[in-house]
Length: 376
Image 1 (cartoon, helix red, strand yellow):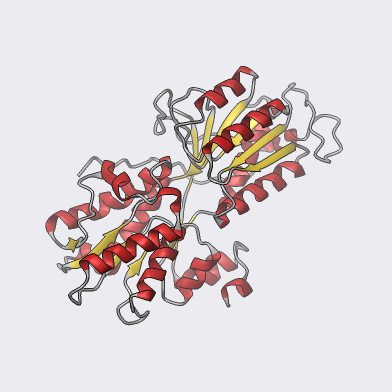
Image 2 (spheres, one colour):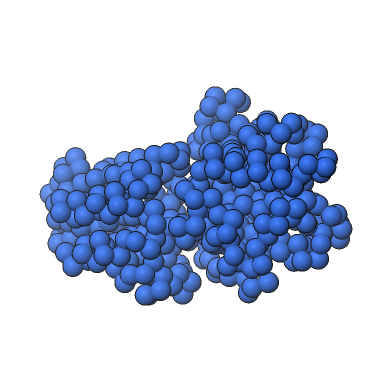
């Protein structure tokens, strides 16, 4: 097993820094008109999100835009339809339109270097949002959740539910999935989970009938689902069930790195005749999407790892405020995220496990989801 890439995370602090109001330009009425503050840094922000096809990116983009406009910033929010060329073009247009701060959730973290280097040459500051941007020095800050811990929580949940740490010998059948190969975070998710689960695979307590069990953390791309597509995950699960579970064998657990893949996996299991409360396997997830919260309440998904993206937006809001004010930007990790050209200073937030018992107290009571939307 490869050495665990455990991230050292400082205690979560999500209160706004005292200088947050500095994001409102001097002399501004707060109506989103932009302009310069006393430090001379313009609060003109370009937000580049990857797609509208996933609920979380819609919430992230719109939520951050609202926060920044409330501080008097000019904000251009763009979605790139999961097309890298489109994202590059949108970023270039944002810079040409006067954006001095870019907040970028990359589709492909390897391809944005030239566009961002051009932005830096025009004195823009770049914040990588949730996904690290690789291969360029033109990234100033990174705001994200502890993505290794996301996977670790998924692996530990499986470990606990099956009693593996207590000596349960199984064997249990497991099918592992990984996220999009062009998403840097997907590697962290898989490593966190696999560092927990791989020893049980090696000992034979967990068996993978499909053979799709990477030899180490770095092999995750071979089982990655490009673009995090639910349909593709469903097709892959269909193939595994039809090819490796034809003699009455059942799947005991599916490692799904996020909710989008989990939906496809669940559709495949349903079509294959699996029944919740009977032979339905343990299924992990991430993001607490409404459809998946409903699946958790219906016993079709075991858990999701919740990343309160409102807190991520608040932290980015504080970063923007500090940049505009000319203050030091708060980070709590300065040695983990090496993008191949530099170690990018990062701020990490903690993810939280949500199960059926936690939906009301954690998701609904916090206002993250509406009770009526999930049938409560």
